Amino acid sequence: MKVNKCIVWMSVIAGWLLTGCSTGQPVQADKELDYCVTQLSKTIRTLSDPNRLPRSIARGKKDWRFVGYRDWTSGFWPGLLWYAYEYTHDEQWKQQAGLYSAALFPLVDSAAIDHDLGFQVYCSMGNGYRLTQDSTYKTILLRAADSLSKLFNPKVGTILSWPRAVPGTDWPLRHNTIMDNMINLELLFWAAKNGGGQQLYDMAVRHAETTMHNHFRPDYTSYHVVVYDTATGQKLRGITHQGFSDSSMWARGQSWAIYGYTMVYRETKDPRFLDFAQQVTDVYLARLPEDGVPYWDFEAPDIPQAPRDASAAAVTASALLELCTFVTDTAKANLYRTKAIAMLAALSSDKYQSREQNNAMLLHSTGHLPNGGEIDASIIYADYYYMEALLRLKKLKEGGLK
Image 1 (cartoon, helix red, strand yellow):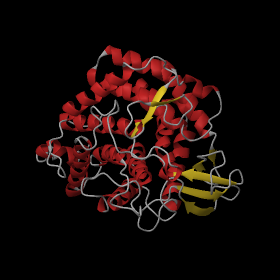
Image 2 (cartoon, rainbow, N blue to C red; image 1 turned 60 degrees about the vertical axis):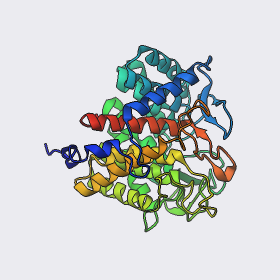
Image 3 (cartoon, one colour; image 1 turned 30 degrees about the horizontal axis):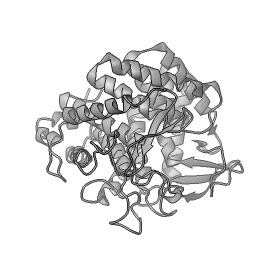
Image 4 (cartoon, helix red, strand yellow; image 1 turned 60 degrees about the horizontal axis):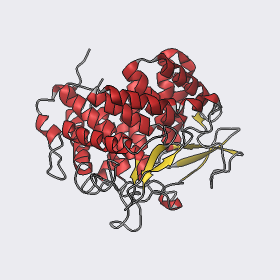
């Protein structure tokens, strides 16, 4: 088996693992993970009902806004608790993670209402099964994958993202797919390897291929949404829902693409997806602000006063720490690793960490600016991918991702 150059060169770049290029501040994975656990502990002490899941804290506020298990973000809180257990090996985190994961079990008692079932179930019980091998989680995950697969349209070649009225999508006459949906393919890949059947693997690959061909402009920036003819599968148009305009690069959407195609390459080892992951990464990196944390949209008209999106930086940092282990070009692998560390250095600074301001981990994420939602806020999925990135950094320092 060929040894990945990114790992071989570990000794050469060991110092980079502790230095953030843009801030000059050290990135010590254990120190920042300790901080994450501290913030989680502060939140846990305020909770009493596992059916109320933290979602966001508005700018300048102290208290979490809570949601129920059907909210698309519901899986990130139990996912964070599983990450705390993975880091600390403390049974109290395992117990809490199990409690909040169980609150999501009813998601598989009815048909999938949209693509977010992957976020909800895989980020929570996917981590739970990985860490415990609890067969209950495996059963839920397989049922969820089967439910998600029912949204796949073979004429189009993608999963239907929103089976509901969303401006510009013309549902139910048209089929819509959003970039976020790439992340949920991981549930299908997992299920295909764990008893769900080859058809789930084929479905995930087809979705990734169709998205690769239709969701990107010639410069590899992505549309948020593509609308298809339901009957013929023909692409009708690319639009945005959460970005600035139909022609702009919405920051979190591009980060979903970076993360998604990195994951698809991991699952398929198809070099087309590795090349594509690099293409969508390179255009993002080339246009970042100095500190590596993007504005909510790269074409926002009020830059540099526009809100940032720390969640996009966290998603991208986590993705790059995996992508660098796949890239065989040593210089490029090192670049991706260094950029990821620089992003984590910025996110770990006093500008972006919440610290005593509230009980979240990070400040300055932007959820849905066109709709006026969660602007310059603390948001649960930013915390999730930040902690995931720190765990990946720690694993790389210790010898490689598992």
